[in-house]
Length: 223
Image (tube, rainbow, N blue to C red; front, side, top):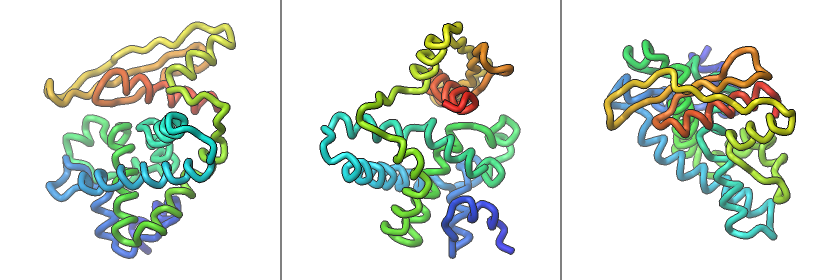
């Protein structure tokens, strides 16, 4: 049995080169041979694939509309949701320090790993296979898109939903900061009255961490 058979099943793509898959899952905290270059490549390919899909889906859309839709689909909180669907936290390869500090659940690491996987699929099988795989991951999200809908960031969506329910606005609290001043990480909790426990997320700045925590709340509310 392949060591990554469960993940391969979730991805819908079977890596022929298990070492390439392992590299895509390897964080810089573990080794100098890590997924940063694959992440760089995957980020560019993801933007192209989603941009092309939107161009084809909305032939009458203006450039600004297409840019807004693409931004909503490729931003970190969307990638984190994909990563959690794949349960990537069970397969990440991290250094001991990163493991001890909660790296397996760190949103920024999860999002970056999705991009690294895209880069790895492209390297192994080329653009057409990579595009088909990524579009399968995004199929539901693309089908739900419309030009009439306003695609707002998760914080705005959550605030407006609570206002529509006549509930108090979310409360965001920084519960932890770590790292050197040039590479800090912020852990933020989002507390709302409709959920029994706060959601939390980590990112390299407070604003992004708040967005990711809000995205988790929206998911739990099925919004």
